[in-house]
Image 1: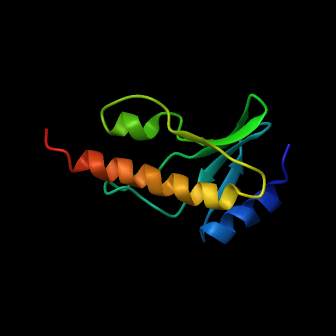
Image 2 (image 1 turned 45 degrees about the vertical axis):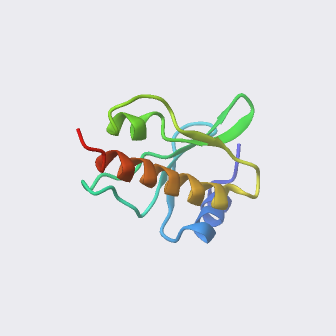
Length: 103
């Protein structure tokens, strides 16, 4: 298990205003200060899967875009802040691109 306070500090170095919420062993909901155009916040979870830490959207981003599938990225210890920032940018870009696609 990881130290929640240390994890939150690490993530806040990359994105000011990040909050985490522990949701069981080795699972954290990550709240970021960004919203989609409709006011919803991205779903981001940091969890351990198969002995490795990863950020995942648990399928929410592509579901919003009318598709399916999970976006996730494996995260190395000490690199979680930069990985979170890159993950948030990717989620926001996918949502923006899907909302600009004509029907």
